[in-house]
Every structure is written in structure tokens, then in C-alpha cells.
Length: 219
Image 1 (cartoon, rainbow, N blue to C red):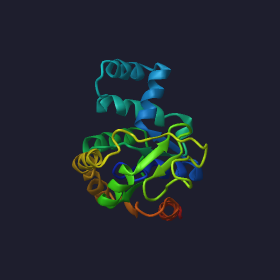
Image 2: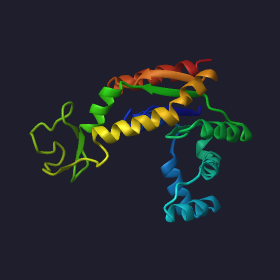
Image 3: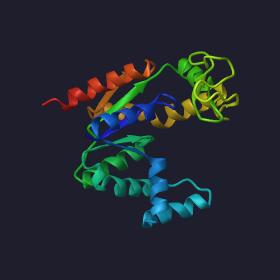
Image 4: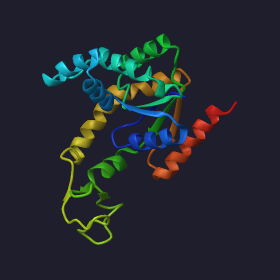
């Protein structure tokens, strides 16, 4: 089973992809990880990407597609994979379809994590982590049991990502709706789209996704 997870930044795609991968025996693939692995391995396309990245440029679509082609051709992807963070544009989606067809593969389902923008902005802009152990917290929904003290390690230093502020999150959402949201219609037209409530608790979202995948796997 080959899957794509769609949703704006902070919708929980990575968390859900990890859970699906463990339960279904699929390989979770993110473009960032694949790029780093290809560069580290020194493959021809990895070397091509390395030159671009060292020059401070963005790796173009055709190079990313080559890296995905290499990765999904490996034996561990034989039972299926989950693409997390790709495709991001209609052009990338078309290139991915062409690649999969050439390898005799296809996308079986696209899971859209639907969110409420205002709640999502609050979810992201309110999060922070322990500087010592990385434990995650939130201003309103997940505070430490003792204010200012990490539940896990007892640390007292906390940090926020510089881009986890309301204005930056709004800009990231605008970029998503401009570039990536058109994929919802693209995959709906292909009969691949399945939408779930991405604002529900993590376990409830996982249960919704599991229900979709069980239906797909049924004979």
C-alpha cells in the first residue's frame, strides 16, 4: 500500500505517518531525509543534490524525483511507503504519477488531515520544548505539571522555534493553500482522496486513518 499524507504545517502528518508505518509495516519517506541519505551515500543524484545544496540553492523537482525513484526501488519499499511532505505542487504530483507508472506502482490513497486554521495557529504558536531533553509542551493544552519545570528531566530551560509565532504560521498556511491545497482537488478527481479530522486528539485521528486503510485493504 502506497500512501500520501496531505495537510498544512502542524496538522500532524509526521506523527500519523510514523504510526501508520509501524502498524502497517510501511516505510515512511520524507524528502529531507531522502536527500540527506542520498548525499551521504554519494549516489550520482546525491552528488548532484549536494552541489546545489552547498551553493545554497533549492533542489529542483527533477532531482527530488530522481531521489524518490532510487529510494522506492529499494527492497524495503516493496510492501509500500508513505510520502510525508511530497508532493507539494501539482507539477510534483504529475511527475510522481509518471515515476510510479514507470515502476509499475501507484498511489493507493491520499489521506487529508483537515484542520481549523485558527486552532492550528494556536496549536503551533503555543508550543515549546525543554532545552535539555526535548520534551514538548504547549501554553494552554499541555503545560508542565510544575510550572517552569520539565516533567521528564526536571530541566528549567525551555525554547521555542523562531518560526513558531502567529505571523510566521499564517504565512506558512498561505503558502500551503497557494501551492499544495490544489492537490486536494487533484486527488479527489482521481478517486484517491480520503479526509479525516486533523484537529481531533492524536489517537482519534489515528483511529480515523486506520478505518480508511482497513476499508482499502478489505477484499
